[in-house]
Length: 285
Image 1: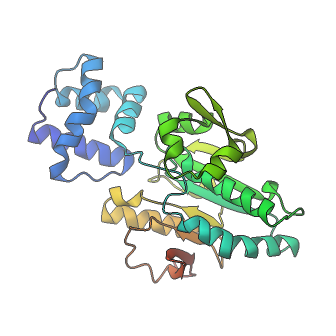
Image 2: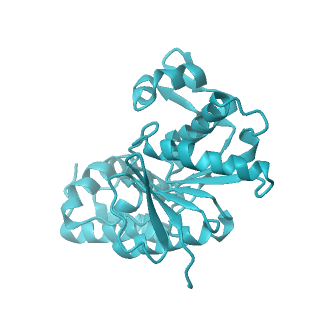
Image 3: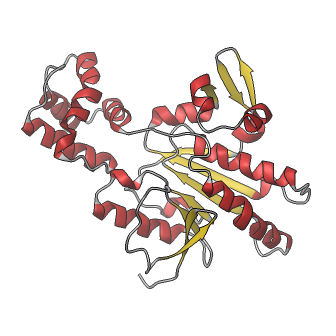
């Protein structure tokens, strides 16, 4: 594995931040070395500077996707932190269902930003379906909920769309009740039921881009994504999320261990059973 020089690190760091927003500190040179060395070998390149020049000059889309896939962190699990789905079932779903019944809304739109291999949006659909069945609700169905999921990585989206998971992935955070109810075991793979899988619309999307084409949402999950961005990009993304949330009660979920500072002008912080969520607040742009 070739060692990365200081100059090469700066070139690749700037390229990565420009392409996908990830802000790599100087102590992350090892990360670029370890994650991109395979691309060097596969491409017959002898240095990271050659890789940078190839990316910059040839604008090779496939090479660019390989770099992004290699450098992005796709750590995920089912019902991660649990509290967002407790809040969904205890606080949000009763409100949404009543509003649908009163014809104050026709549907609920939910966006999982940085969805990785699909566990978060699928957990959300399972949570909604389980809630409706547990409370014997017949007049409201999954048809009233529209779930979008996006990620910058094409490779993780391919896995998410397939809805097939190995035994290790299926164990991470998924209770047996949900596994047995919504998955079928086929050899080494667990296959998600079409009832759940077909409810999520996946799309490749870079959070640095404009959100205008996405439409408005009632809930945005943007969990453990912003932690990889610079302070400036974090502010830009949260401002754009605020812009696509419906008024007056749009909800933003961040990771339980994430710190969200200076949110008071845009959001109101709420807590429920140890979980935190942020409700949209009107402000002049």
